[in-house]
Length: 367
Ligand code: NAD
Image (tube, rainbow, N blue to C red; front, side):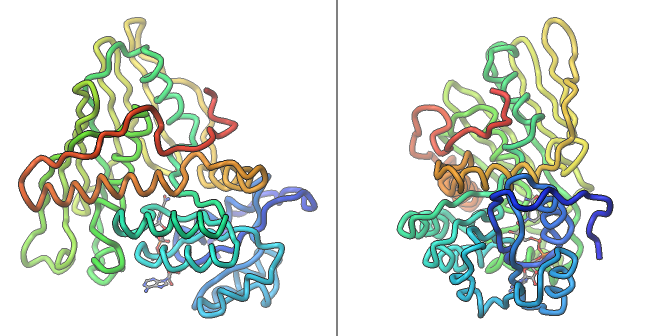
């Protein structure tokens, strides 16, 4: 069982927020379960899976019982569990909406993996359902919780780089399995764009704090490659922000893993390479005084996310990356696909102000 060894269990007894993990795939078992074991504010109380044997094995590892394992059909039985205050949805993208709506009807708060859904309309329905159910919805954008990304944002927004002009970001990897759900349009909602390209989009929006006014894009879907029967292999997209700031982004399922972000100002630059990995984020800030690599802790990004959401559940305030933040990325991605289809620049509804779709800053954000 790939639970990370040697992780001390936090003191029990504190009023940690109890979560049900919905879906026991790779992310849940390799990252989220180990992260929750060290979380100060969150703890796993139940598992929801169609693989009951796997569920029982992880339940044992988490000191839970067989009664804490639920099938997808028995999801509603969680309603009776007062110790389960929130669910963390870690399923293929098109299933996020159904489980979010079901959780909201039960009065359970929802932390949902990115992308929030498969398009803006579906994602907005999730926001509406959570509002109607009086529960919080957070999009799990782990890169908006790391000290490295906050330091990059601070460098950009403090004026240290001078006037920011351009950004670029590449996020891609090689996907070889033509049968994977990520290659099915109905389950994934697209190819690398909603899966990994979304990191470039979301992080560019995060460091600038503003919203794009237009997009232009092209995509490539190679004929005869069985992996890309339904989804694209690569997307190149350009985002135009207020004041003429432009971001150029590339995403692909056909390249060796790459995860970079650059911000180019008149007097300085930010470089993150890698910019989106789980560990080993590397940040260099260059200004007229030289090149600086701030010494920042390599924190468990999923632990930071768990803690932030659990604190918001406790105090009832909006999480920093609420459902609305996920909807906005879908609006932009819908426009990216439209631009690729039509060959035209697509204009987006102007959004005034800063951090227009975000909630309360994380306590550890350092700003
Ligand atoms: P995975 O394929 O490893 O796991 C998916 C889980 O969903 C499995 O337990 C599977 O049994 C279950 N499932 C239920 N119905 C299914 C169906 N119809 N088809 C396929 N699987 C079905 O996927 P994953 O990598 O764990 O991704 C899950 C979610 O987490 C996705 O939304 C993905 O975008 C997101 N994710 C986020 C990050 C991150 O860094 N934040 C990283 C990886 C994945």
